[in-house]
Image (cartoon, rainbow, N blue to C red):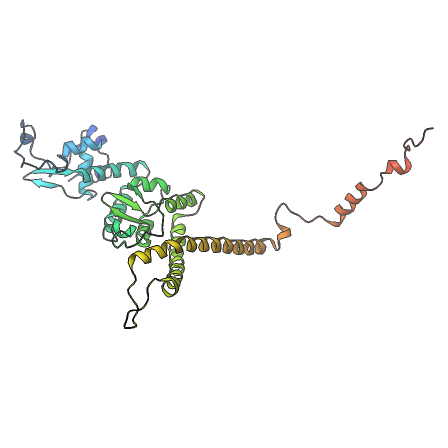
Length: 331
């Protein structure tokens, strides 16, 4: 086992240069086997099977020392490799994970923080699938939403939010439904939401506050969606009655056509009401801040004294009353 001092340095190349003895290699074959021309015979693999790497190959591909790779394994930052006898085989998933760790370290994250984020990442696999996030499991009609989903590596997500991708914020994003884990990447439900929320963070709004506002907004928009759904169901749903007087099952094609007609109307109404609502609330906030609209900064009400001065300026000048008179008809 590595000493405590060495374990604190994830990039153990410096420790190697100091001549420290590496930790026992529990993942590698002996030196005799490593130096054999071809190594132990490997079981035949199908042509469509993904690339696999031995420990030294994986470390070289990831651009890190072998000692660092073993350190990550000891810290459980990497999932266990597949084993054939004494040989450990790693795959593209391990390589992607190593590159993610390196990228997050370069962005100032600690190994402990990275471990927590990776744990939350793995938990996200059980939250909802990418198909559930995008609503692709039960698509019967064209969606109202026109959002374009975005695939992001963990380090790309961290770049968007300027180091505020904490375990708590990641859990909140997964819980709200903004992101899902798909393979070794995140899938964000909407490029517009991603970029708008990132811009709010750049403007100085904490990501936690943005997510809390998003959670509340999601609840309110669900209520608005329910209102329009009820209107459609009660007044616009195609159908009729059967010969027995029961409600007839609507044809999917007729429902889709009716929704196509209603979709732009619903969006238009919501956009207009949101704009009007923002106008009302912002006006009220500013009036409370400044007392009334006339006291807004840069729009000071002129004082009586200044008004009198302006009137004096506009009237006859002192020169016109007692000074040299202008020539009126000659000397």
